Length: 360
Image (cartoon, rainbow, N blue to C red; front, top):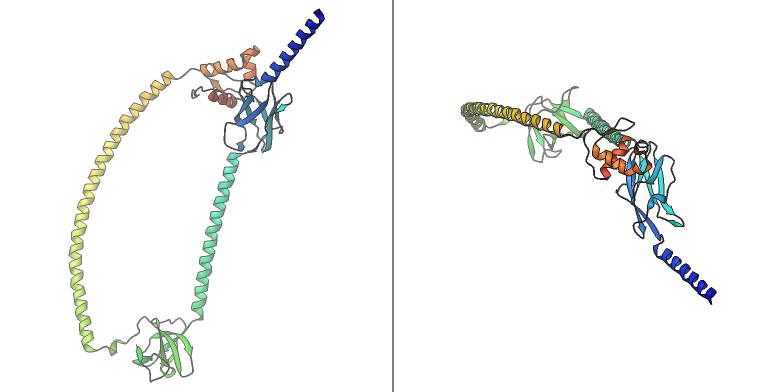
């Protein structure tokens, strides 16, 4: 009877232990970065959150795995881990495990962002230079093509006075104007008796016995109608128009003088206003400098003192030092463990823990 009771008690204890283990045992591990980038910069630190189910389990005894020798992945505190990237680039993956429970895998790529930005800038400048050279080449080619086209043109010179320019190559059609002796036109076509020309932007025809090939260097004349053929009344009207233009120019000159005097007066006023504004600005700048010097002196007096200097010479305030003592104080020599990290890594730790940058 006693043995039966003893066996029953043992069975109850074993069941209770198994039940407690089932309830409190680790079920899952999830890791998630506290940042959005998938490309990490070289020689930098990044915080990764480690979430357990059930919550609040001590992750310091977990295994932190990374498949790159140039990247360190290790526990940071009770809920987070830290990634330390090295100087080498490349892809890597991280996981966290405990016993038979393994977390999700997260992959990143390490790049030298400064070098990458410089390369992108150089590529953009090279592309802009190539575009500029291409534009210059296209302009040069267009200019050469225009010169070649101009070289291919032929010109004819009128050798008679007051020559009719016809709309077609015959004497039965209308005239489009008159050409005077010595005028030069671009030759378009020649049918043996008539030559088709560019008559100031329109097509015209002149009999071949009225023209000859223009000498080298002679190009189209700017005048298409002979002054001699204009009616006398038209010439008188033109003289009147010229006289009116001269009177208008005199009036414009007087108005221009008035305008110049007004502009000179306005310029003088603007210069005086500018001098006054510059004097006021100089006075304000002097007052602002005095205020800044006073603020700088006050800030210097209130600046935190250096409480500890790491092995690489980085200075830390008392608040930062307290973080490191709390982090590695359990070892008995927190400074030795802190000096395993660079000054930059320690500064990152202090910022993550909410300690402000003392500025030294």
